[in-house]
Image 1 (tube, rainbow, N blue to C red):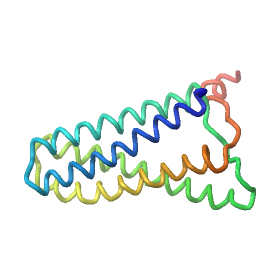
Image 2 (image 1 turned 90 degrees about the horizontal axis):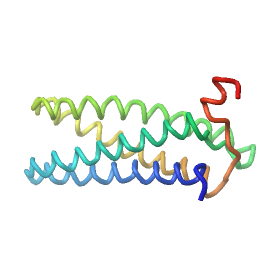
Image 3 (image 1 turned 180 degrees about the vertical axis):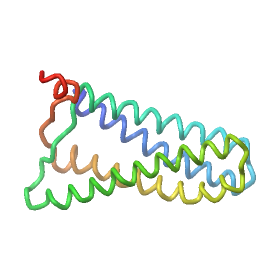
Image 4 (image 1 turned 120 degrees about the horizontal axis):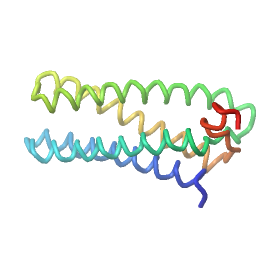
Length: 154
């Protein structure tokens, strides 16, 4: 398996793992298991950060995958992809804020944010896995230039 396929599979696995850990952490806090919740949510954050590092590395050094499906589906895919990107950006900001409020023991704010953040995170993971399925399973496409090559005209 080459980097064009391995890195997306790894990053998708990590973001889905992160969402599963968030669900487990949510169940733990509902049961009053605060210490287990903290550990699980830190693991979820590490999985999400690992996803981000792999995703950015792939974009910069390897390149992404272009749409390989039918032209009549491309506009729908692009709208879905845009929705996913906006959702992921919002989820990242909410996630960092939620982690911060939990770390600083601002539990009232953390509780309110956590509920919203979790739902956004689940939707992000689902749409991310859907994008992966569309690009690498159903409609494998071509590859784009690595960002570093595009920047330096290579």
